Image 1 (cartoon, rainbow, N blue to C red):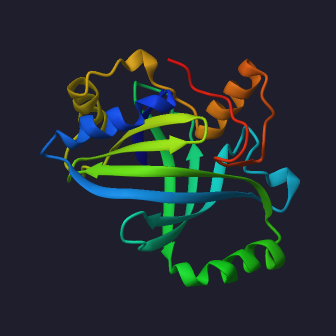
Image 2 (tube, helix red, strand yellow):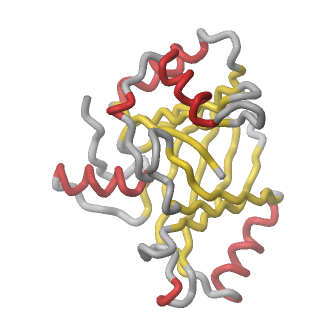
Image 3 (spheres, rainbow, N blue to C red):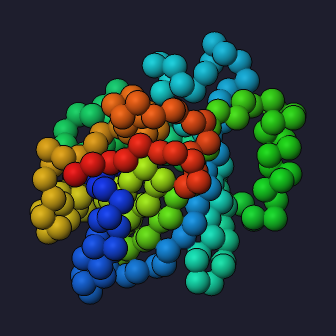
Length: 212
């Protein structure tokens, strides 16, 4: 079970947020990563991951560290549950499997041509990772704005208490947390700003903007 909170900011807050986190000496900066995430759906419409009963996301994510060019890849399943929004911290089902980057094309072939899963959407972002044994805090630069995400990593402490400790330490306002996923935020912004909604969200396309 994953416990997290997410906050959104305008693009111009990117450097400021990273510098703020680098000042916390009890957080280790693990680097900046370019990530591409592709989301798939079940081949049978009646079992779609996107229906309200399941409400899940099946993802392939590839990640490359900007300076070292080291790459990693994973399959990820994430699902909102009946108790996701109970309390002040999101609690979601999450399962991840790592695989070697050079097997990516084989995996895609199996998913799309053998299992016949449906490619639904994709997005790219730059992810800056700060962590210690209790917490992982990331600054994500999406084509439409910045997300700061605080995720519990402690196996000894209460997930909610751990996250709220850092919310308070960073001076964040709980009322400003966005409880849904990135695609919910993107779609909301497009509708509010009358911008075309793309299935593949990339930096070279016209995008809505998170406004302060």
